[in-house]
Length: 392
Image (cartoon, rainbow, N blue to C red; front, side, top):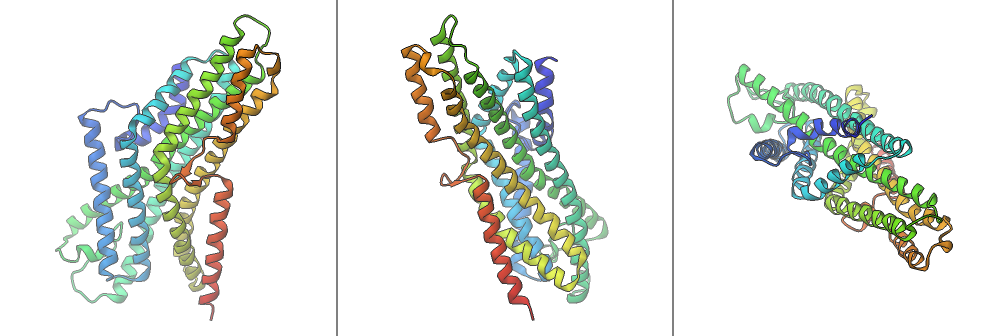
């Protein structure tokens, strides 16, 4: 199998998800790519403004308002991720270019197996993102259309006013005359914007997590090379220094990724924590009123936010552990038999293990499994209090 086939296996799904939004790091940054980015960003920005107006007018029921709040925050996240990854395009391009070089440099089946395994994990994340994007979009469109139409019939007395849009926009569009053909066109456009919003969120997540998993795979290969390093042989210092330089290169690539995602993760954590509580409360109310349609929609949207936090936490924890284990693998070798010049370099590897590279939200919240469990614990405690409060 050639290296081009390995690259296609690892990167093609991510490319198909992100290139329509102008976010693919290895694309040619020409006017056409810029136009795709501007169109998607403007479309998402318009969606965010419409949801803000819906929240401000408050002419619909509580369920429609919750839908507007959900889309408002999701739209902010999607715009932020697309824009932020465009600002830090050089960091992502460096990482993906380095990944291309890594595939060209494969010289054993063991290395290919490790890289293939991590590429497979990246494809799984991509498939999950794609399923979440389209399934949640369909469920949200159907659920909101039915809910807004029902609430409109019960609460509205304005003749000629339409409802049942794909996304909350009844109050905003109430100031315009909407014919049947225009309504269909708006419904289709809103459906496309909703899918774009999901791709902007989950597609960007896949883009970042896939390359992070690749670095984890390279760290795993580096650990094996440290453990199996042959003390006896020619050019011992040069071969050992090559491993040191490889370790330094992977740290630099990891630092670029951490820099690119820091602010995005901070906003993601804040929004996800709030929406988990809001959607959980919506589920409790739907359960109390036996509204199975709303229960299903709440669970699906809630699952999407939990999936985002789960993936970032698991991959962040995996990256952190791989960084720490590099020093252990270097120490497990018979480093004391190395020449004195090479032995000194082991100290630097051990020093880096004390401050491993980590994915951090705002450079102060580490994205790992303990953080994830803390968020879940706090959210469940809050929901338990709300459930007790609504009990008769």
